Length: 79
Image (cartoon, rainbow, N blue to C red; front, side, top):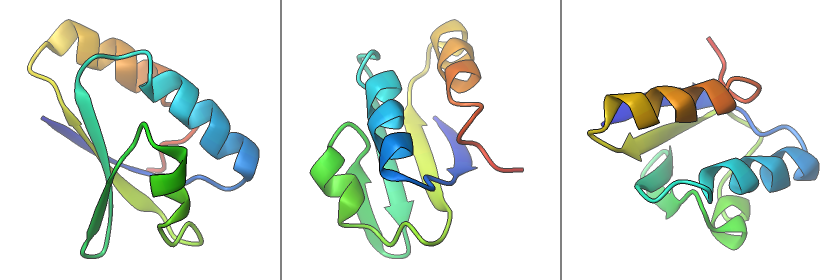
């Protein structure tokens, strides 16, 4: 399992983010406060407060696949 903090600034960011996440077979969740939604669901993402960063939780034990996934998410990850 890998956790990072991301920020989805625009509707276009959400669309691009879902496009990346949907390519992978493992489960990915977005957590904002006490709410957790499927990161592959555009409607779920829009139910979150996107004015603040959210936590991404990727449920993958495959280190190679997870590294590739994180590389594709770099535009959304905040340090």
